[in-house]
Length: 212
Image (cartoon, rainbow, N blue to C red):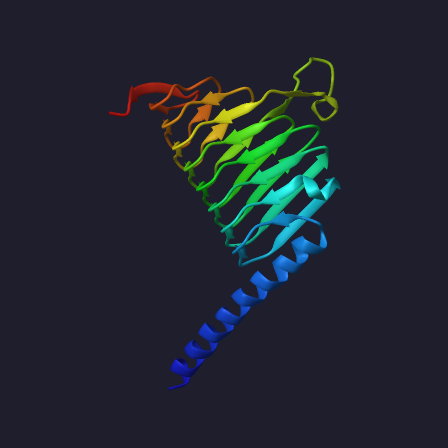
């Protein structure tokens, strides 16, 4: 009897907690001049790191996030999230300099995702990104005689097509274009372009076949 009562209490508390976060996060984003669409549901914590223009962050209709979301913009960086996008927990997106991070509609991003953009990054419609993936449009130079902490950054845009699937633990490096319908195998490091409908695996990622 006691266990059943505790379970009922926990279920009620969980529902209340979810509703609290949905309501609180709408107020939090609104109060920071973040534009968002209808039916936004963020059921956990959100951290905004605004060192640029808050109006440069926009969220579309029917956006769902399970929490631990970090949106970070610096200088003139823009973050644009389309309609019907789903983020799991622990998603972090940074747009710096004049970068635009554009995430199209119906994209799914699984837990522990990091996107770092010193220049433009686009993710096409209906793309699915599994857990522990990262996308990095910036990297340090490697000039001998200069400490790594003092190296300048290099930037190159990244384009990820529509209907792409990333397996667990994929890393995408600067300057890469991944075509529509491509599949990137788990733990691959994408350092060069991948064609439409290609299946690519390995470090660095190489095409092993094409979707039929």
